[in-house]
Image (tube, rainbow, N blue to C red; front, side, top):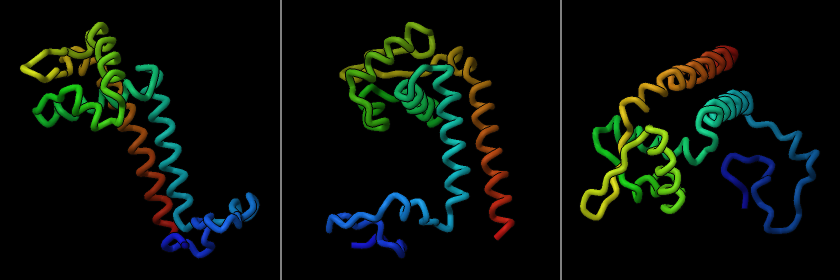
Length: 150
C-alpha cells in the first residue's frame, strides 16, 4: 500500500522489500525546506524551555496549566494527563515540584485536584514567552521567504 501523494511508495514495507538508505536520502518532498524551518524552530523552542524547566514533561504540564488559565478554566491532574499524554503519577510528582518552586497552586476541590498558575510564576515566564514568540516570528519570516521564491 502506498502513502497518498508518495510517488516512490516508501510507506509500504509489508513486502519486506525496503528501499536503501541512499534511495530514501535522494527522495525530496516539495515542502522539505518548510519542514526544515519548522523542525529548527521546534528544537530551538524545546532547548529554550528545557534550559528553564529541565525536561519536556514539565514544559508540557505547564503549557496545559497555562491553557486553562488563559481559557479561564483551571485544569485538574486528570485533564493535564489527558492533554499531555503523561501518566497521572508523573503529572502529580512534577506538580509537587512546581508547587515547591512557587509556580503553581494545587488545591483539592471535591474529588478533583485543581491546579492553577501562580501570578508570580506566570510573570516569571514572560521573558521566556517573548523569546518563544521571537522564534515563531523568525520561522514565519523564513517561511515567507520560501513562499516568495515559488
